[in-house]
Image (cartoon, rainbow, N blue to C red; front, side, top):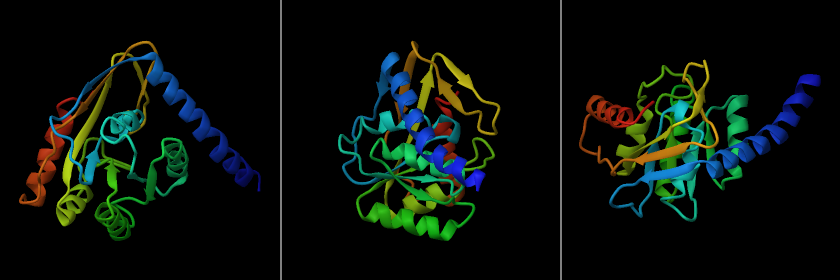
Length: 207
């Protein structure tokens, strides 16, 4: 009972505090955006490393002034915290992973893309290994014809956790440099080559 109460409180308090901290970091940092020459109007698969997740909603807002996206998150408790936090940024979520419940998650993501929603995905999530591209990002893009755009955020000042993903928390009063690639068309590529290309693009600006 006590654990249930603590979790319920956490689901209210932690996402709100997390949202405030994200806004504080964003507002107190200088921002530099490197955006593609053309921003597609059609739905896109946005991919970013799990450890680079924190500030990505702000890069997404450079693409869509009215957000219309679902982010794939873990179906564990930490995923529920992320889901609640994303709601403050008007972003939806799909709970699960492309390792566990893969078929259901991919069906939901593919349906979302066909319904006009962008999809945000961490190709190495939710449990790694770090910098490994899982099949899901390729499968959903190829089955819908969606382009892939990879995201990075490079802060000049940050903390880095000791977790498997080396999660990055930017510090205030530095610079946030955001990178978004040109749209990548992987529709005619085989699985291995598509995964290799996505990883190469993601590593270009990785910490």
